[in-house]
Length: 207
Ligand code: ADP
Ligand code: MG
Ligand code: ZN
Image 1 (cartoon, rainbow, N blue to C red):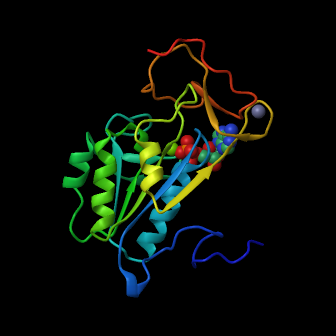
Image 2: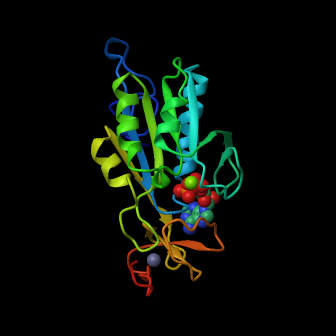
């Protein structure tokens, strides 16, 4: 059994489910890791708790990610939830209704750098922001705005998948097909989770 954490409602060290009443401020949670590490499942779990607590909430995803569905956020296991696809951080900010206190964002690595200021602005006006995304790209490099988001976040959760080669803790997403660029969206036919030892850095040179 897990030791009791500092906050109710989650495993040890996980963020609070609701702001303490005397201290109603916002904050930023980052959920990161490789592909198949359960980021979307964890994001949907936290959003569901917000819904159950009747906290006004909204879920966004970048318009680029249409892997499974144009509107829904879908996990590799098929868990899903309605979301609003947006083309930019600016559009995201403009589409947060005033009554919303919890904002979820999936695949946050695909946003422009403006996402950092956007989530900071939301947190500063009292919103709990939960941002899930890949921390490394297919070459094992830090992905887009994620490093900056991790720096400004109050809570960072790094998840691991099971390495498809050795069963160890996977931190990297091995691209299995020849394609260049960070933006190649795929599923289990195109990527597999690998640990540091089993990951093979791409022979394709950096642009
Ligand atoms: P992410 O958003 O991090 O890509 P998801 O939340 O969509 O991950 O999917 C997690 C699910 O992926 C797991 O519950 C499991 O069913 C499935 N899965 C497939 N391959 C793996 C793997 N190598 N390690 C762990 N989970 C895997
Ligand atoms: Mg996901
Ligand atoms: Zn391995």
